[in-house]
Length: 563
Figure 1 (cartoon, rainbow, N blue to C red):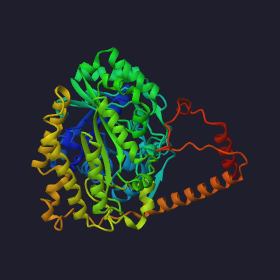
Figure 2: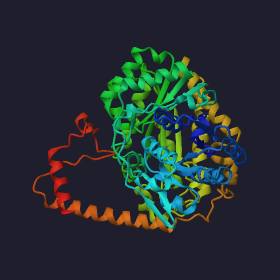
Figure 3: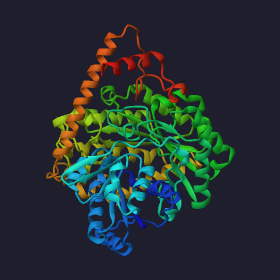
Figure 4: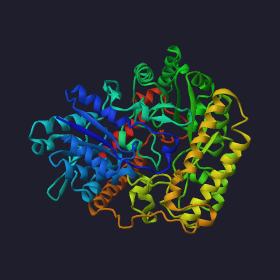
């Protein structure tokens, strides 16, 4: 059975300005398929090679696959749908399959607007896709699809979703096939080296209102650190990878295993050959103050911190449960450990003003991270905050949900004024860094890395690709009133998806009411473990291993009895 994976061609001037990122999903799906006996697998990376529809169609026609599989995040959903439409035209007998986070939660929307899609894989796809391929190779797919867990499809005019598949408990059983990728094409511009995105853990125990990782992966699972280092060593030896970013939302959650990971890297002398970066929470940096030198010796050189906002009001709205002063202290600690810091700010909510934008700049300059990023708030349509915003969300063109396009219109600013304010922050921050910091601060690796980051910014600025400025027609403050984001206003939420949301909201409201009633009726005092933050502490090891506190378990049992 011939299988073809295609990575959609989607560019937004966001993360890709730092380099060409390897589509790890292809490796993670191909490995289990080969293990199951399916080895006629092909891959088209339309994004890295900037392929147009005609070229993709030609490749599909040449290969004549039996199954075409595509993934998508929210902004690439239309490009993904179009690939499967091309597959219908040029390989009409192929089974057309879509996966990824957007399709997982928005399958009713996707199947309504793209009825040519045969099947949607919901959730992590390694085991589900193997079941799909086995069913497809049997010659009786339509009858067998009903028994595959974790999929959605159309049955006539009806949209059907089978029960969710269980999560993969043993992540170390997944052996990604990294040979599927042409590694010479995946470069990290700041260091001029090949880059990889391996996975140490899946899931997140925290429930930030703007995030969806905790919903997609469902439960938190972490791999054996030794196996992760085995994989990284293989990437370095066989594919000449010189930099990697752990794909985890927060790899430092399980401190014990993260320490084991760092110690194993050091034991094998890998920090001499490969450097790496992570995203993590401010609270973890504060917790690990004494461990930061160890992390740096293990090759950790870049930490992206979810500082999110300079105003405490916004931190509270995001359910971050952190304090502004914590952000400043975490940056100071990382600087002292000689780890480069990237501070992330989310801007563009309905309460954004010129004054709050200025506040983020002033704090960024006061805190002195090495890099700062102002991301436009993007209300993922499957997160709690999206539904809380309600009618304030006016744009349903998901191709613009990319962290660089202002989806929300602040009450006190136009979208053009918001973009101009963000660009003003970038201009001031990086021009001062370029003139007074990067060329003169430190020597050796730190200086080379920062100048490499500056090179990436300058390249994207010269090409007008940064923040899609060329497409939007932004050339400076004088054009802020003429900016055109080219929103497709014909895009609407499908009735089937609206019904699903309304049903979900009703169930959630009823569940909250039952839980509240149980808590009020409970005689004993309960200590509730918060998430995402999670108050002022991280999880203990016992919590990570699912040893629930007895009092919490008692209340949970009582809630279930009342349901």
